[in-house]
Image 1 (cartoon, rainbow, N blue to C red):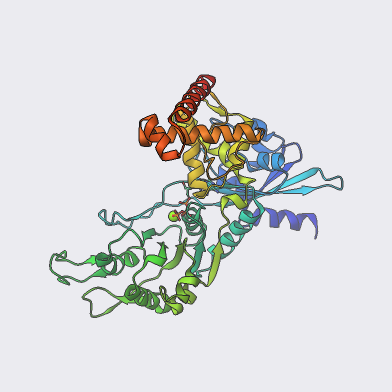
Image 2: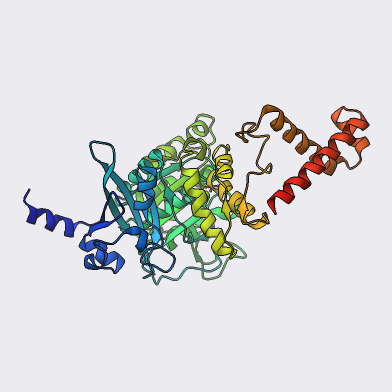
Length: 445
Ligand SMILES: Nc1ncnc2c1ncn2[C@@H]1O[C@H](COP(=O)(O)OP(=O)(O)OP(=O)(O)O)[C@@H](O)[C@H]1O
Ligand SMILES: [Mg+2]
């Protein structure tokens, strides 16, 4: 292809493009990126990202710098100073010697233009998902996001699955925001949080005078409120069977009857469902309608748990640390040993648990540099303290048990009885545990 043609393509892509060299210096951006960011190619070309990134700088963060550091593809979202939300996928191109020659960043604009449709304020359980960022350098998550972006522009029904806290809600929001429907509502419905007696009228609405106690004018349901947009049905496995049949109708011909209604209501909605239970298993045991399952499972997107993408842990820690330092107005940092400790954890609660752990460490530590601590789930992962001898680990675990037993049983006599040791041993070991605790508290100061 000739050069002129390539330039035309470069500037007319639907995505923004940002090219960076192996040293982090901007080579060029395309016109779409200029429009998205408000910065021109002339302004950015030749400038190092190390000089462009910072709290009061051009960009709040940079996928390219993460790519340079990790030497692997990275996906991250950022906000621009002009209030736009961008998703950046950075991909390294290596030379013959395995050095990064070029980083190609592809950018999606996730900015949601405010829509004017008024949403009933008392639909408390349905909410607009708040602003949250996505950061990942794991290959599997990059594939997940690729797939999500690819199907976002279609109207396919999507089924997100994965353990609690892996980012299902976050991904649902990403799909909505990168779809043609982004100017219309995204209504999130947590099927587990709505009482069974209300769920039908909440979802489908009711006609005037449908039942005693109902609003005299009737009320629109979530599907109607989401017209033109997306309905995100979270924890779909908790939907009662009779509602499942009604949902099947919506999926088949986008129409339904309101409670007490005689005429069908038709809506234009995209449906995204999520579950942390295995729906196929529920189908096998009769807990979920098989036909509905197939209707929902058009595009299945399974999200891997955090312990299967540990490479994300250090990057997420850095991101959350920045977030909580800003929130709590402090400048704390984690020692490399602490990051290693956290990266070795099991994280059954996934990213949500990691996020909470980082915040807890930031607000509870007294020193600005936070070191490894015993506070992290020795019981769930016995190898959490790399670098310690077996004897030290066992001693640490023992101390933890004694402190817990003291809280639980109070006196050394009761501790001894509960743990099957003599009172003298209980007393000695407890004393030791208390001293250790004091010492590590001092060390943190
Ligand atoms: N890749 C990521 N980068 C940054 N933050 C993330 C990422 N993935 C998840 N989070 C954060 O982790 C928390 C949990 O994510 P989310 O609510 O999407 O999980 P979930 O799978 O919907 O969990 P549940 O099944 O419990 O509803 C959120 O605060 C979210 O912003
Ligand atoms: Mg969720």
